[in-house]
Amino acid sequence: MKALVISGGGSKGAFAGGVAQYLIEEMKKDYDIYIGTSTGSLLVSHLALKKVDKIKDIYTSVNQKSIFSHTPFTIKKKHGVETVGINHFNVLLNFLRGKKTFGESLNLRKLIFNSINKEEFLALKKSHKDIVVTVSNLSMNSVEYKSINDFDYDEFMEWLWISCNYTPFMSLVKKNGCEYADGGLGVIVPIEEAVRRGADVVDVIVLATEVTQLNKLPSKNAFSLLTSMFGFMLDRISKQNIKIGKFAANNSNAILNFYYTPSVLTTNSLIFDKHKMQNWWHSGYEYAKLKNKETSQLDINS
Image (cartoon, rainbow, N blue to C red; front, side, top):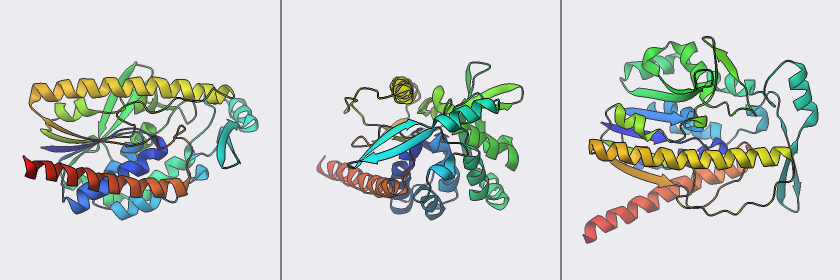
């Protein structure tokens, strides 16, 4: 069985979309298992439906308002450089409303329900493809994988939204008596789960560079420090996930094909700039094209 795994990465998901478009449309790859975390969860359903143009339109047209119902950030541009600060009014308002997070992502929930209708959902279930999203159960201190085969339309869309909620900047969701958040808090690159579900060939899109290419500037405010800390922790989690995934694949004789970002796309993946995301989608497509041409050339030469 073949699997496509897409890591978390917020707005960088546009790059993953470009890579996946090339794999599906040009290389004619068809997968039995699609597993995503966070932004990867947003992509996998449309990719399984082969509706690449539809998800491309979404990723290359969204902005902050498309995602946040209460944004915790302010974004200022000076001399072409973006500075992210705290939206004190929105953060205070959210706390006064009894919320536990700095921001709310109810607009993303609407976007998800509007982007996949019930007919498309039923078509996915009939296709016998396994569409899986990753969520973090904070109450039980565990990671859970939610398959489309186990839920109805409303339930699965809710899990898909939960998978993308990067707390404490986005919504914290209470469901089944537990608090749930972004799957990336536990597993960013769910290779091991793909192998566990029987995949023997896995294409893995990792929304980070293969080696560290960035020396971050000093934090300018509390949010800047918090995002840097989360970035550091998620980077370590990602590397650990990849090591575990390689170990699982080796034990099961599964083949892993990795697609990393060739350069650092952004230092804050919660900033959704449609122009940058348009460029990242194109870059992902061209990168996959170049990588597979190089692989084909090596095969010929050997």
